[in-house]
Image 1 (cartoon, rainbow, N blue to C red):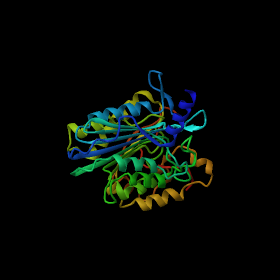
Image 2 (image 1 turned 30 degrees about the vertical axis):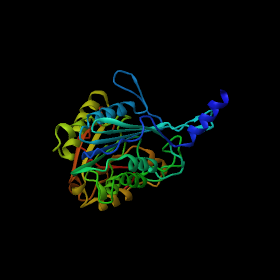
Image 3 (image 1 turned 60 degrees about the vertical axis):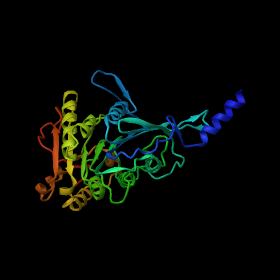
Image 4 (image 1 turned 120 degrees about the vertical axis):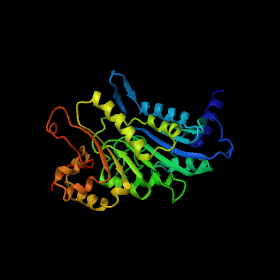
Length: 350
């Protein structure tokens, strides 16, 4: 009996995926009106306490909301990637520890356990393979794509060590942009909205990387306090199917800003970027942001500051297409600052 169990462990460990509900049923021919992709990173230190003092681990609140959005998506399709730490049984046999929850028309049709076979693969390579295998083929003419990311700050360079258990998979601005673009069905497809529920990624560099395939970006130019954007408003895609992506993002930002304002004493900054308007000046702004970076590499791990602190030339121009929600810290050096440009820059000199 012990020998049989041992063999079963080996067989299970050979595959990098295992389906808990079986293969996807045949496409029923019903057109999908929209696709929402959640990527929830839980392969790092994600422990914080809510306003009641209860511990929240592994971005579990974000997962709970994403599952609700999937159940509500009666005319859409929702992919929820829950990327957890790679583990091994007896330190020998790899487990399929990450999860993909796949909803179509409000039904959970696939629940897949998976892991990354290549520990140095491109970021989101395995997730892209799963997407191609299970996505619906029939879409309405006005089909829209949405991508929502929960995780730590996506660094501008290097990016090794982002995953605690997969340190050789590089996660940075370039690999992130390339990875999520690959999740689109074709080269002509676009994201109507990308939500970055991270710290310090409302930056000129990130906006510039997403512009080629994204219409609207919602992000925080500074610290998001290990909290997250409230994304339950994604359910409006069902009750208000004509809602504009910018209006949907605005509602998410307003709800999140109101919630954070009741619990947090430090600076709160959220920003909505209409990338069609931002496109006109993003190259100039990105060059400026790069020019003020201090060569001290340790400063690059500091939280962002408002780019406007560095006397942006033609600063009014860079407010075009940006809507910011800002509340200053209730104490400290920045408590007197009453406005924010919506753009985050690393500390530097100019």
